[in-house]
Image (cartoon, rainbow, N blue to C red):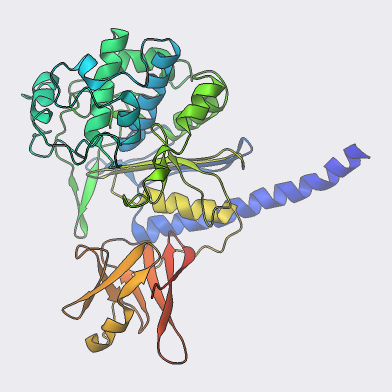
Length: 442
């Protein structure tokens, strides 16, 4: 009887997978045609490929197309690798979460207050970036960079708040080298890449020629230009790892076994540490090198990290309870995290709107003030008869009398819902094609 039941179910499963493939391929084709997505994407469910496809060009000058095995710089997904490496050193008792920063960097200001735990969770109070340090210079060494950031003021007292910090993860990469006695690159190769059988993954440097590695482009109006030269000696720990969609899936599979870490370590790594700081601007909770973000009204448990750096846009999304994995890697500034959000929506049976070309229309600017207000965690601002989202860097342009689109984010629209009395009650936010209702706060 069980065998008969299984046989009867197989056509249904096959139909569902075929239907998902068609919807996802249609969605990605629209992302490519409308939003000019360039990169690679993989969608896996129950260890079955739903979609694996490449779009656009790895090299625009030579018209070399992206392929499945094109290598992309991962940007901040690299933080996930850095955190795994720290966890491995803790398991080997070569590090402790309570180790202080001044143990590795003597005379670091307030170094006796900053722990490895704080660096991992962005609660150390360190600034976001190097800022005045020129990352495109080959003259600046790691030691000179550390000397420079020692002079940067803390954003808050260590451990009292949460603010995303690239500098914190750069320091973690240097702690890995000091604790292991190996370079960051060698340690990761031996303990993560090789163990997970990631043959097309490595750490960028300023000299090596890497086969099949995509060049990076960012958008300047309707054209693409090269990203600037990057000194990879400094962009370590926070960025700097390159990989492929297949290798990222291997990492995901290895992470759920005990190839890389014990179950206890993974539990520690995926704990929501910064949820006690509700006013820091974080929408998601951060663990160690990973965001823990319930997807779409908290129905699906998501472990994720995205990255973005001058043309590179990447996303690594794992839904362990649904056995779904999605990775989107772009080398032309396409919004990978929004694309992945839409792909997941299709898999979860949520209606997803296909990308389309937005066209601005003229409306009476005097009517815009009624839309201003707070909608959930978003704020619509009316200034000089123009609407902005959160800041004046993001203007909202009208495509109807009640529906607007972002002037610099292709995958976001904002439709205001007005009652019979003419009062705006809510807003439908569409991101990556997935619609969410945001109630207006009074």
